[in-house]
Image (cartoon, helix red, strand yellow):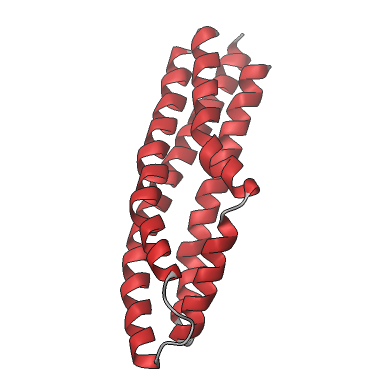
Length: 167
């Protein structure tokens, strides 16, 4: 029962992270690209600051630990294939979700935070275009990677369900 709960928690956590990044891909950034660049910069500064909270941290930083716990429990219960699936999903998330975010998106966000709120429109347009295009590339990469992690977690959970039916 603990293994199934852990697998479900892992699935939900991967889903939450995927959904968060996906929302940036298909609505948030495209919307900001359509408005005054000074407003877009200010809005993005506010959104970047608001992400630094406990609710987001539990999912963003907790996800690989939930996957590792699931892998450990699966291994101990004799579900070696499921253990490797969750370990793989957790490792992929660390590399493609966390490390990519910390090495690419976070430094860009920190640089954008230093942009003053009153920048002439041409300069703001250039700042926003440079930021948005590059930021979106890395966000799309981590979205695809997190989709893969979510699929792996779903597969692992299905494997547990298939084994329960056979028992």
